[in-house]
Structures are given as C-alpha cells and as structure tokens.
Image 1 (cartoon, protein in one colour):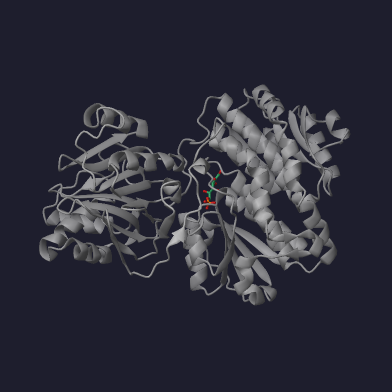
Image 2: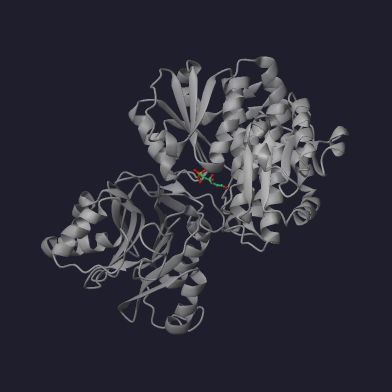
Length: 611
Ligand code: F6R
C-alpha cells in the first residue's frame, strides 16, 4: 500500500527520501512523487509507475546525476510518497504530493478521507479548483481555506483535522515555513525517526533501519511538526522507543528475491518465536504478553480468531490446535466478514487478531468492534508498535523480523508456531503438552532438511509450468495448509489454484479433474492417511496428475502419485509447519520461472491499509 517518507535535517533531503521510499517499494504501489526545495523554491515531481521512472526524471532535470546537490536546499522539508490507487487512476495527476490552488501547501497521505465528496462540494462552491480524482486533494484545499481565516498553520491543521472523517497519515510542507514538515496520524501508521540534527517521517519502520536508533510510533490523534533541530507533538505524551532493525535486514543479501530469503529464514523465525517461551523439559510455556490477562484466560470458554489472507489460514490452524490441544471451542472468521456480521455476544470469549503488519484495515475495524463489545482482545502481530499490537488488550509478538516479500511466508510459519505455543499455554493435558513441546523444538532442524530439496522442487515447478489450473487438497491440519499453498501459487504465478478439503472433492470439484488439472495432495502418515489414499485413487481414476507431499519412508505413495516431495515425520498438529515449506518453494519457483517479480505481485500490497 501507499508509503510516506519525510526528512528534514543536516543531509540533502531528496536522496534520503528516495532511499526511504525504496525501502517501502515492497508494499506495492503504482505511482510516486516528491516535493523538495531547490534554490529556495518548491519543486514537485511525480511519475506514474515505478520509483525508477521518478528517479530517471530527477537525475535528468533536477539533480544532474546521483549525489549532485545542484542547489537543493539543506534544512528544508522534503516529502515523498508511493501511491497504491484507491480513488482515481494510477496516473501522474493522482500521484502525491497534492497541492492547493496557490501551490503553497503540499501534502502526502496514506488512508482514506471518507467525507471527501462533501468537503469537495463545499470547497468547490468557495472557488477551489480540483485537479485530481483523489480523496486526498480535498485536504490541501481545506487547509488553504482554513488558513485564510486562521493565519497560523499549526492551528489551521488542528481545525482541519477536526473536519476530516476517515483514516490518515499526513506529511505536509507549507512553503512559507520551508524549515518544517507538519504531520498527523489517525488510523494509518506513521513513525517519527529521531536522529541527531535530523528528523524523519516514515509510514514503515523499515525506512528508518540503519538511519536512526530512536523512534516514536505516533498514536491516533497525534499531530505536530519536525524541523532540522526540534520537533513538536500533540498530545505530547509519547514513548521514545529503540528501533531494533538493521539495514541488512532490509536487504536481500545473496538471495535473488526477498521471498526466497524469507523462506530460508523460516527455521530461525521458529527458533525466535520459541526463544524464552518454550521450555519442553519443564513442561512450561511462558508468554509474557499474556500475563496481564492470565486469570481471565483461565476462564475462557470460547475463542474467536479474526484475520485476513494468509493470517486467516494460520487462524484456521489455530482453531484446530485450540480445540484439540486446549479443548476450547474455537471459530475462525475473516475480518472483512466479522466487521459487518451480527454476531452473538457470548461471555468468556477471547478474540484473537492475527496480523503480520498489524495495520490491515479490515482486521483493525474488526478489532474496534470487539473492543466496543468489551471482549478480551488479543493480538498475534509481527510489526512492533503497529495499530493492532497497541489496541489489543494483550498479545504475543512474532519477532519474525522484517517480512518484505508481498507473499507472506516466514510470518505464516511464525504465526503457526505461536498458535502452537498459545494452545500449549492454555492446555491442561500434560502428556499431550510434553509430546508436542518436545517435537516443536525439533521442527527448525526438520525444515532445514526440506530446504535442502530446493533444487528438486525447482525442477518440479519446471515440469508443471505448462499447467494453468491446480487443485490443492488435504484433510484436518492439512486443509488450511492446502489453501495457503494454493494462495501462494495464485498470488505470485497468476495461475488458478483451488484449495479444498479432500473429502469435499466428490461433492463437486472432482468434476474439474482431468489430465490437464493436476492436484497437489498433502498425504502425511497421520490419522487420515488412508482416507487421503482413497481420494488419490479417485483422482487417478480420472487421469488426474498428482504431486504428493508425503512422509519420508512412505512406500505406498509412489504407486499413486506422479511426483512426491518427502518431508520428515512429525506429529499431526505440527505437519503444517513442514508441509507449507515445499508449497512455498514450489510457488516461488513457478512464479520466477514464468518471469514474474514474485516480491511485488501485480495488484497486491504488503499491508492492506484500505478496506
Ligand atoms: C498473502 C498475504 C496476505 C496477507 C493479508 C493479511 O501472501 O500476505 O493474504 O496475509 O493481507 O495481512 P496481515 O497479516 O498483515 O494482516
């Protein structure tokens, strides 16, 4: 989704802002723009498409090559934006920054102005001329209008914010105060980076990695300004926090894509998720983030898990785990549905919100609803300081590190690991707890063995590259894994992939099976193994090709499947942690062999901050 970068301080702002925007390219966008001061005058440059287009123009006309300052003013405000179109086409006019009629106020925005039409009608009647189709442009004209009467920009901003309905993170340059950048936040993330004689604004902490050590995650309703030497924040109460993110974490290293790097980081993501939390020998799971609600959790009778996309698939696994391991009735609901449903309010229910980014608009809206209904709200979030992390009553962080590839991989593995930990934390079944804890501790090593088959999985992707449709099937724990595998393939390869419970095949989807419609089947040696073999027979009888993910040492499977990827034996509830890895690698190679940029699939964004 959209990205914001702002800089003011001792360095030349343009390079710094462009660098910041590059760090959020992974979130997905379709146009970009910057506003900076050169020879004392504001310069606005916007382009459709990738940042490289914008940079090309800047190098050609403004900076005359990398590193050349060419009169770019130090100590003046620079703001930049990458836009993911919501209102209006992804073109140059709709790209940010937007400006008022007199070109004195320039603004970039993430979020949505819900009452934009009403404000636009009012401002048009007052003579304001609108250029774009965006909801954002209304804000600069509103500021311009209010400034006429108030004459003070700080106060004008405050008044204007009271008139806006919606979600926003703003960075604003008022050209009569070039040594300041104004900002405000409500519902869209914005981070203030505190350097020495320099200040940054960023929509994503990744922009600040390696640049500052201290940050303030702005809270909803906060607004203020930064200058080269100082900052002002209202309401003032804020925590200065350490930014534990290195520049290396925001880079690909030796991997061709972030997605591959992140898949290879999965063993470490699991170890980090368990570190200081799982003590198999002592039968102990410690989850510090849940301590404050520990007494309430002892009494819960029901859990509702709410999330979107891959996080929702992790939730479906959580549902099975909470029921089997902890004996607590659980339901998983997509956040986009939950927010509009007339749900029965039940006592002693905990609501668990799962989100990698912590900023997904539907999940946040669902959380607000649960908070209004006075439920216990818990978060399972990767991005520290994000909205969902802050607005849930208690929760557990993934600590999986930055996930940049748009297709979620290591965050999923980490979410499933933590759902296991929560299930163990809530469980009173000592023997099951001991067995699962001991086996969970072995999972990272088992994933390392699967990663060694990377080349073989690439060959398999090559072999199946000509197919345009795939069925993914599994039962019990392998059903959420199957639909997650299908999602990975479709989102980065643009081929049709359907995930189904194997038992449902004969109720309709089997009609699709023929030699050109292969099935990826998750057939581990577990409680439903024989049932899965029957399903495979049904597929074979219709001449369907089968790629099986099976347990090492399984001799029967070779007679049924066309191709097999073996994974180590583990306990049934932990199979998803192993099975998903070959599916992620298969999707990765399928997408790259087809020539797609798997880190930035079309139409998708890393953090879906709009509904
Ligand atoms: C798919 C993917 C998305 C996200 C979904 C929720 O690979 O990444 O489906 O899982 O948009 O995002 P978060 O977890 O940030 O709430």
